[in-house]
Length: 389
Image 1 (cartoon, helix red, strand yellow):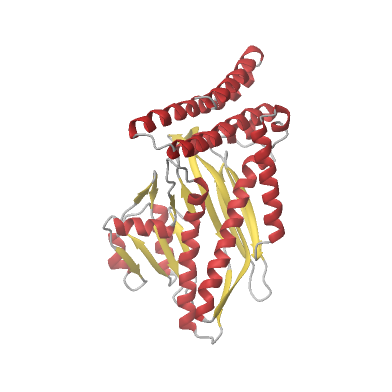
Image 2 (image 1 turned 60 degrees about the vertical axis):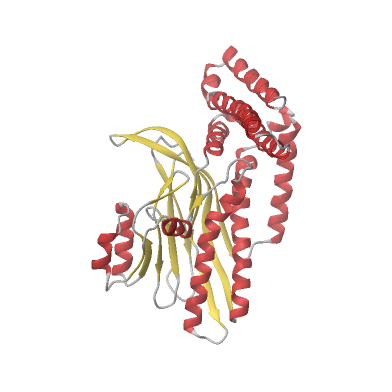
């Protein structure tokens, strides 16, 4: 497609056609500079797809660890980052279907996964001044399951049981949206924490906030107690006016740098719900300082730097993976707090220098000549030092 300018957005839309009712059209908007996997899943996750993805990821890992510049140069952005995000989406649906089955079994129910669509990946933050986009800064890892349709039934046809069952599955759905990113990005020295509707409500309770159960009949009395952003308040108000039930907290919560609200919109007749965060996004958002800095540099290099960018981005990825491995080894050595802090700071300093030079890669690349050689040499030197310090 055509190159997009800073501050522009692009929209992804999916349409599901059903035999007995109108087509379901859903869409999601992402800022330029995003890098994510868009996935559709229906029925179940293919075992053969999981096996194929496992083989591909292992092959990519082997190439990155080889240190062979020619082999590393054959890797693409999809093979380094795309497959990782794709694995995250498939992991989500695999766990979701497993938990749904275990929940349904003792209750005498069953759940079927209709065609779904969603994304998982990196979304940058666009900085504005007086309405004009100025720059991109590290954003976060976002899981946005914007089209999630299921069919749930109880064997005895009891609608009350179905309501309870669907609500339980909805909570599992939301919990997995923050659990999957946390599982993927936890490191020995940093516990990743992602935001989701369920996580935001948990944070609110822990902070002493009141949780409100709002219906159309009490919305006039309750809404003045809710202080979320305008988009969230509009979404909540529209849902209440349409006869839905809304569960939310009173004030914004902070989850590892992300600030916003969590809210649940339920259909009072059948229990179907939307588990939302922020200004309308379904899913989760994850802030991790170290991961984001390295990830931003890798994405920019691979996405816009051509073969040179892929090469330098791959070197940075190797250094980050080595940093994580080195931290695991340090924790096993039984060092004193002072010794551990000193060793960790040395490793972190090397990763920071590497990230800085990698992020400057496009500048060196544009300059060409000696500057380009110097940038490549510096990355190799830092890579070598990261394995010796």
